[in-house]
Image: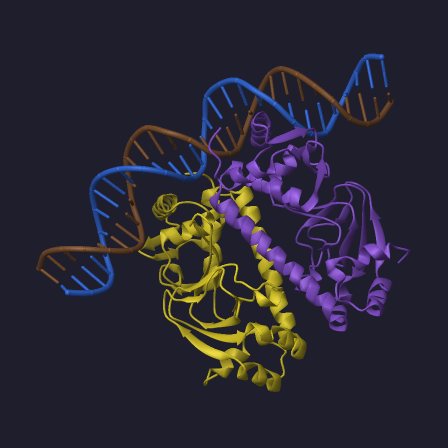
Length: 234
Length: 234
DNA sequence: GGCGCACGTTGCGAAATCACAAACAGAAGG
DNA sequence: CCTTCTGTTTGTGATTTCGCAACGTGCGCC
């Protein structure tokens, strides 16, 4: 791989507890790759040839149903792994990963996974912990979808995004990448129409501020109350 | 642990590729435990002291929301691991596991996980593959909940159950443990009322046959068509 | 600087699903 | 054999959410 910001890499939880010498070896076998906005990191159903770490940018992980409907499974932020299908015994990618903005990823041949995990136990353990966290997240999402109605689901989704990628701005916390009503709908299992209505309603109550491909949470605490269903109506 | 059916254990995919001597060591440090129907294997929020393999019976994994609603995350059948929170870096159980019928489990101290995975790599790998499969399952479930309406979700849930635990009977494929309308509702994010209506409708069309705590799929193929949304209405 | 287009908003009727309520049925236990 | 309890069925009206359609609007390209 080429020259990279080592201090950035060193600080990632994923690489915590790995001896510098080992880390060097790990990085040596990686390829750095640049993905332009809207480009694919990998595609659903494609052979799982590599696994990745996102170094810069934002990636959207999307599952498409046989009849063409799309669901956004999660957003990936720098420092997270993606495409770890191989590590989990699968040989095709179960979803597509799309660059939301220009991105930089590190890529390793998927076949190397077993050697990797054996040679650098911390790396393996760290990754599995991340998977564990992810499994938990997804299960929580199932519970949400099963028990909450749309308004609360959308509120939760926005709050999660602010946690992941929130950036303080003068008006509140900005979700730090372009996101459309359609995207939010695909995260929460609803339609862009319903999302649009919710956002305008919330804007009138001073909870959020939204524009084209952009959402700012103005009153996170009140939005949380709403998400938890403990906010008095209108 | 006491005397156990070794041939059963040997045949589990979880223990595939493990040298007999190693398997002995693994089993030596396990405790066999019997859980009566409706008893807990572990409880949500409790300290994750052990991880388990189900040897006999059926276990329901349930997540309870702060406001008391329950969601059935999955059913566990013999040979599967459960409570692997520790292996994934968590120290409390994220859900409860309840014996649906009388069960037998093997239990290991959760603290042993790291040694285990290191000493018996196949065991670790097998487990992680199972986790991978599970992550995939849950994500598929999210997609279903996001894109399908109740009728198809319930159909899918029943079909999954028949795959996992289906038992041929004279009238079709029987789901091989007691399951109520309420249970099915909690698997699919709907109400027992809606499930009840669906089952009676399907029974009239000759797709299923149901009784108290019991469902038999009479025409799996047609139910699959319905689940896929490719069955003509009425 | 104007035009086209992708994204967003909004109104309205339709459909799915829930919520509440009442009645029923079969199993278990005394 | 009767009683009780749990699980189930079913009706009705209320809500939520969708689907469609029309209409805005700001961004970026030519």
